[in-house]
Length: 116
Length: 114
Image (cartoon, rainbow over all chains, first blue to last red; front, side):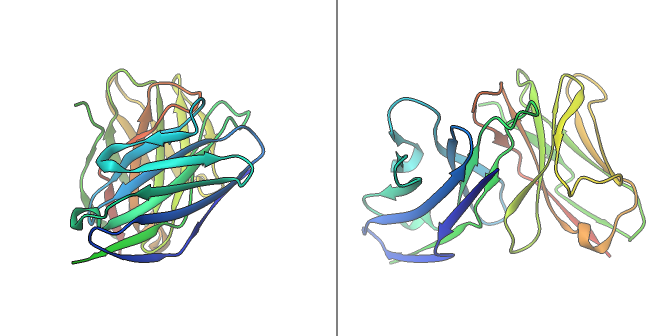
């Protein structure tokens, strides 16, 4: 079984400030971890993913995330927030369930507001 | 860049009616998924589909739901008799393969059941 916890349903940062969105997961199998972004009235866009290998992964739009197995965390960061980063961010985990698929389990999402 | 497409973008139906939501996955992808997002809630897995059969389904995916790949490009979700609680955004996704490969999502169909 897998689950994802995103701390903070709403995060506000000033333009130019550090963005930190927290994600903790639980998984009974080696996890694959993802961050997706959802802009208003749009679908889910993949920001970045961790499957194997390097634990610090870089994504689009200057975002990165670090997989920390000991902390079961996959926090998303960006050094300097931009107004266009305002959106909802979803952390997701998948792993082989034994049933032949890799369904994604999502967190509840964190809505990021950027203050000018 | 290839993308997943979904039609219609918004569907309004009366309770008890059948609806079919359509998706065109990315052409070389082999694994297909449906998720839904009730307003204000998290995205939930419904069903996965590979090699012309369901590989996994959630508790939500009861007998009222079915999926089909009627031809080489479309992937459909049918709800036989809609309920008010089926109102949600339905997302189709596809992936090239298993093994943690990323799933690419379509823009969604907003289903409103009156």
